[in-house]
Amino acid sequence: MTERLLPTPSHTIGPFYGHALPFPGGPDVAPQGHPDTITLHGYVFDGAGAPIPDALLDFWQAAPDGSLTGAPGSMRRDPSTGGFLGRNGTDFTGFGRVATDADGHYALHTLPPGNAGLPYISVCVFARGLVHHLFTRAYLADGADPLLDSLPAERRATLIAAEGANRTYRFDIRLQGEGETVFLEFQ
Amino acid sequence: MALTQSHIDIEVDDLQNAYDKAVAEGGPVRHHPPRDYAPYRSSVLRHPKQPLVAVHGGDPETVELAGPVFGVTDITEIDNDLTRQHRGEPIGERMTVSGRLLDRDGRPVRGQLVEVWQANAAGRYAHLREQHPAPLDPNFTGVGRTLTDDQGRYTFTTIKPGPYPWGNHTNAWRPAHIHFSVFGTAFTQRLVTQMYFPSDPLFAYDPILRSVTDAAARNRLIATYQHDLSAPGFSLGYAWDIVLDGPSATWIEEGR
Image (cartoon, rainbow over all chains, first blue to last red; front, side, top):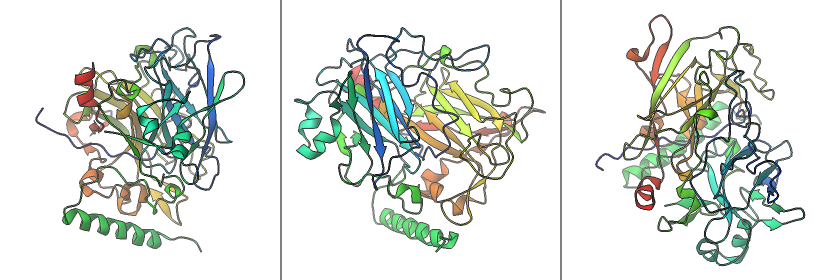
């Protein structure tokens, strides 16, 4: 490798992506009716503690068997109408996309990730005002982990989703201020 | 007190001068905008104040080394032609935007999803919360998708978006631009960015574009008019390549 190209700068997603990027079935990564389905949900907050209604979250995770290969079919299209068909209801693609609602809340329906080590779902946060997206991880359990173990206790806690009733996991994302979520930089 | 353009200009110039001085003194070139770019007011409460935590590439189990996969069922044949999505022709200057999606080693990023969204020719988005009093175009929604080919190439047919006012400060206007969302072969290559058009008089006044304080990096957001890309009697051609950042290029060679 000789040539090193310079990267294209990142820019904000802006407030008006709502007619473009979200798609029906975006939050439904788990096949319909799968008994192992879990719900990862929470709010995205700004530095004043206000919920952000114009954030977009991309999710990526290992399949329950640990596979990282992914599968197409997250945003299937209808070739006759041009509309969205949604997922086929049976395949697990590993990819989800959810826009926060008017209350700044999101919910992702998925299957437990089977990656080596502690199970986690990788999250990519976009919003108006964010000139560069932010990566974080929603860990579904606490325990020994190289990343978590490198953090002070209060910061570590921001990466661990709280298990609730009905196979739900609460994972709030705070962009700034008290309880600011740990955001990641891949090197 | 209403915040005027001249207030913003002073802030923008101060940050530009500070960056230029730092680089002249041997500081690092910043290819991406700083997260806390105050002249873009929406960024003030939306950037983390704690440093990002490094995840090192030595861990081959890192989920982010892989990424979503998209296939032909995820797009339709005309998804990349924004002028054909309705019964009639949209109003505006028809154009073809084409380029390659590359990694930092210059290798094509193949079979990856490229999504675009934009305002119409009058500078209005098909979005209810947008209040710019410019007409909506019943024949233009402003959304497109495509997959890159074996050379990493993408192509969209669309109409040139108009500039539009926004609420950052009094008399704030955005230069015409097309939003791009792209995926690479690893989750860490994910990018959302914007493409601009050559010689737009609004460049100097836009705190979002100016948030990229490195002039050369800013220029990489501007497409080039390319006559060979113009379709005779049909559309004007703009070329714009996208280069994905991130450590994944080398990781993939080692890890897969």
